[in-house]
Length: 376
Image 1 (tube, one colour):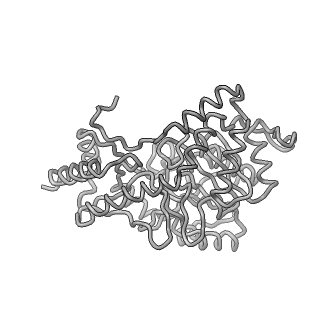
Image 2 (tube, rainbow, N blue to C red):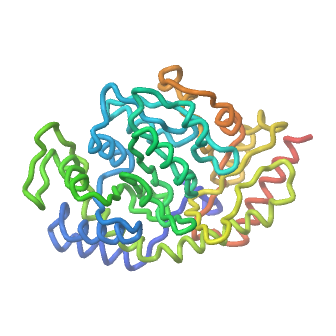
Image 3 (cartoon, helix red, strand yellow):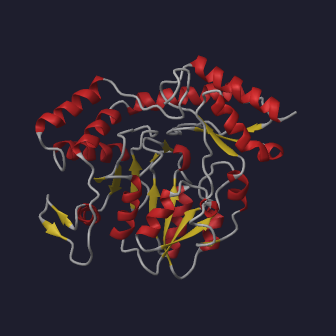
């Protein structure tokens, strides 16, 4: 259990809206596939600017269902960044396809288009573009590559609900996009995911896949494959709807915290900080990712341990997939020099709506004191 003075890495907010929504579900006796799910799907579709949304039980399940709905499976390859949360790759494996690990851009930490081009091959059927840390990937260039090569594009927008740039909205820039609602996300329902689509036939297929091959809305069955038990419950949909309705305020508060971090840490040459939003860009911050300089990379794990001893939640975000025990030496890959470099130096600090200026001061002070000790 956390001490009262601990500052957690993530801290989902709630108020009377969530409590009232849960009581409404409880008293309805309709706890699955009901009005809450339909309402939440409609509001997520509106947020993304898509025609359809399909609620599922997790972002990883959503990505798997997206691949299966597009006909991608055994014998196919899917390009995906090596520097990402492992769920992106696990979804590809669960669909029966094989991941091809490619590198990321050093600044944005999103898919590097040149690395994607280097990974193209006859079995590649899709690109999975991850909007890492709530920042949009270079979708214009990635979609151009996909169009030229005849590939599908799937957006892993699990970390980026509400993110946008230059009129482009996360989840709306591909064949199928996917949000996730884990407790550290801007829309935090506890668990769950949401598929975002423009194509009505694909949306129907996703609804069938999530519900054992049968869609109760249309009364139609899948003819060519089995389905899954991957429904989003009424409970999670009700919480998600309440969270979605305060999303603009939540993202503004997260912007404020990110700006405070940057103001306090900008002159520390031992740290490389993420770029703040530029122009009309909105980042859906869910943590504050930074990197140690090369000189201190070997001290990263010691730094994390020291910060935790001060009651500050922190973690590595992320260990490159090809360094994880199960995935090591299993997947085709191209040059991953940036992922190798970033993966050895990265760490994440708390970032959520409840962080006060005093807490950010405490985190930054502890971080710099720990760095002083390690840098002697």
